[in-house]
Image (cartoon, rainbow, N blue to C red):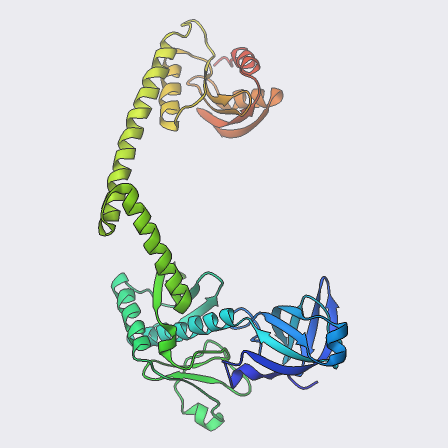
Amino acid sequence: MEPTRKLYENDSYKKEFSARVLDCQQKGDAWELLLEATGFFPEGGGQGADRGILCPVSAEASESQESVRVLDVHIRQGLIYHTCSGPINPGTPVEGRLDWTLRYSNMQQHTGEHIVSGIAHKAFGVNNVGFHLGSQAVTLDFDKPLTEEQIDWLEEAANRSVWENHPVQVSYPDARQLQNLDYRSKIEIEGQVRIVTIQDVDVCACCAPHVLNTGEIGLIKVISHQKYKGGVRLSILCGDRALREVRQNQRQIAQISALLSVKPEAVAQGVEHLHRECQETKFRYVELQTARMLDQIRHLPAEQENVCLFVPELDVPAIRRAVNAMQEEHPGYCGIFVGSDQAGYRYQIVSKTQDSRLAGEALKRHFACRGGGKADMIQGQITGTREEIQRIFSSLELQKK
């Protein structure tokens, strides 16, 4: 069978197209349709597939068959298969209608990636070794690290290319022309090579749809960067996605500004001040918790070897200080249980003279209990009543040393 003709290669703006169904096979809960030609971009090269619908157009077909949703598109051995929500009989003429919002957004993202990668390659000598156009962001993996200052410069240079509104040209050079052409490509390509050229910015082998002019991208925004495999991974948004990101961030900053009663440009300082106040309050709270626990510990029977206390709420630093104080006065197992009979308890058990893990094993024999640790301290969670846990804990046998 001849390879499927890709209509988007010559016209990325083709929102609708006509074709005939060549084959239809059920695959699980969906159907795979093969068309003689398609305007749907199949998943590949780091970019997801187009979505849309296929509508039967003949009088006979329209009466007996409904339109189907195109859920996915992929290519195998030169043939493009459309995963659809329902069947359409072979031989039926159909009209394909792309989800244009998705297609155009992908065109903006992919063209933006070319600009960023092309400029980074020219300016810093880095190569794009990984690309993924996801539903949330576009990620670019460069093989060398970039500083924050270089990334800021790269973002500004990419947006200048957008504002200058360079043409985005597609060409199909022959083998001789290709030999003399300096272009970016991550893989060896067999057969006809499709070249995408952005004036003064990039020349790259690529099979995906792109916008006609860089000005259509509107905005390129780097939203994050991180070290990755000896290089750097950038996450970017372009066009409509960048606009939504900026709008969302602006609204959040306005809300935080109102809550903190500070100007939008002082939000970071306001949050820092609030964080410092929270830390101070938490420190004072832990000090009060510790003081209360130490008071309870002073009232424990001095002659009791195994001791435990139950509290509904206690922060980790206060737990640690409390059990340490308990083991100074009691030679057996010392435990703190935080929670309730209904919700269960978090526990921490320590001992200066015993292997705390033995206490944990004993509790597991009587209760639904999980956790672990070392000889001097264990921690975990336990389900049981306070009365039963206290009874078992008090009766734990001590190993003579």
